[in-house]
Length: 428
Image (cartoon, rainbow, N blue to C red; front, side, top):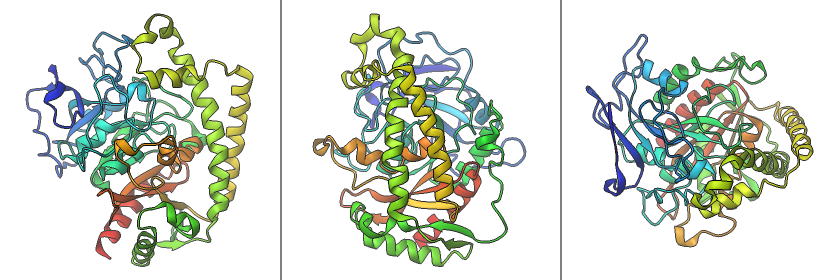
């Protein structure tokens, strides 16, 4: 295997390193390739976020900080699992420095370019992996998601982004941001390849945390699947471009799916439960953990960090261990209360982001909060969630995206329902 940096020749600045291997399938040619048996991803080229170990590649983590200057001797377990299933890594992808930021605005390699419109924000931190799928270079790519870093760039690029149940996929060989919330995630243009990749990858999970993943992928029952649609209705409609049209389209699509049964909604009560409380817990835990991960590098290399990322890292310096531990207890309580409040619904449908995808020139101090308003709470809870594009096009030109969320362990239920819902949305 040989590698080479792609540099400025990459039209969308999506890649950091291209890999050349004998017999590699050309990008885009394997989007529908499948073979049964032990290699269900045979013929599938994939791209991997540049915080994940790929054998023979010196990851940069989107940074000039020399955290790991040598090439990785071995790929991360997640990458190895997909390769054993037949996938071939063809590139590593640009990302927000150390995955610390939801806009995708700070990488040592520069911003990536949104293929829908170069003026639009890409979202982050896994923007290169989203763009690799959006342009058709690969049918499948890997990112990481701590507050929405897979789902937000998927929404910005008009593709599908899946964050599994916390703990269901291995994190070894992945540079952490906040280990309490970090998880790998996957991008694709169809849910079939996501399901195939998830089933192959979860066999490599390094933990057996029965609190979150004992029933991963099992059917929730023989009756209709209950789904809460209330977060698309009422006052929240104004936060979604063409919100009324989207809600009408969803209602029509759900009526076409007899396996789905709308559940009594918790509406704003649910938002109040998982919104501000989740944000408060997330803020303290993320800042505490991120600072302690980067503290060894700050004395010598602080000047090499991207300015905004350095500010975020240093914001965790003053958090005491006692405050951190208190918020971990709050986290456990929030997870219990969220399960109790949503017991009438197996699935929840939400907007993907608040509002439309802005241009870089129109970014404000609230843009980051708007991007993670619906994604971050489900990192805090550890629940599986997937973002899908609808046929409704926002003023930005980006398809309005929705997020489908399930309970811990219901990853396959989320993936399969998302596929059926996406087909129904396109058909009605």
